[in-house]
Image (tube, rainbow, N blue to C red; front, side, top):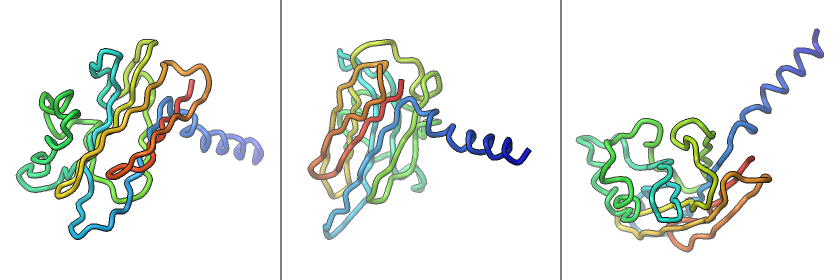
Length: 170
């Protein structure tokens, strides 16, 4: 009985790692500037025609009084044009607070919001960051969906973003 319980618990512990079909790791670099504000970050998937296939995340100051945090979302110019201006905020399942410097992992499962079902094809993961009293940076990682084998694709930022990793699981 004890061996069965151990096996069951081991299996449960391993399940969350296998459940993610797509994971995005975003590194927010620590900047040495006089006035630091955490960046706003938008994450989405584009099709070959640059249409939005999935709006995955928007990280901003969701708790500011009178929705003041939404004021700076327009600084993520590409995200704002593609998705933001038509979105009612906070958006269920994609809105979240800004992140401190460090690595942050976002996981998505096929068939569940916000990833949903992606048709087989060529896509681009887009990550855009903008900071109040700071800069703006946009990074793209092209990928083929669905992945035929586990893959990690990366891009390296230069200012507002550090390393971005896209982990694909078939």
